[in-house]
Image 1 (cartoon, rainbow, N blue to C red):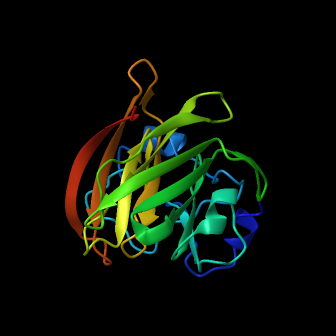
Image 2 (cartoon, rainbow, N blue to C red; image 1 turned 45 degrees about the vertical axis):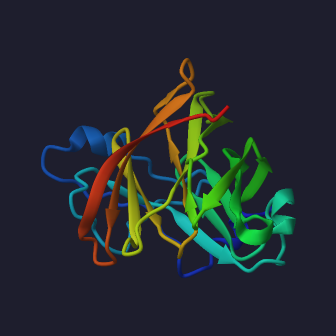
Length: 220
């Protein structure tokens, strides 16, 4: 399952911004310098308005259905397969049979460019093309054995980038058509099976379109 090795050469690959604002020394010290596969962090192509923390851009690859499946479930994909890689995790999102829902495979355990195992799977039902639930998963763990939350965000039609606030930095995701964006959060409350995502959506030039907070809960 060599997901990450196939991501690297694509022009859509992004990275992390190390730029600081005055008075943000503490945030800079906390901002990661590498992504989960060990590759160096690079800035996004534009600076996002209203995001005052160092901006870490994730990587994305869109593959056609029927191409080499990055996880077993994706062998039955209908439509594009969207592979994402960030600071603490990697994910694959693809449409279900009949395009009435979307599936995801989530991972945090990587050995270089190779995914060691998938630690979570999710299915979200689409109603009129929209998700009814972000389908939070909290079974994945990072290298410090802390929980990592994965959830879908469905951005607006004018959104080119999503920024998700983390401790000391903001992770930047590139939107991919109408496919929901699988994002991660470190602020997981295992006692209540919840995670909070602080999100902002931005236009292609970085202009802020909207910001909001999503509190997701594991569905029963």
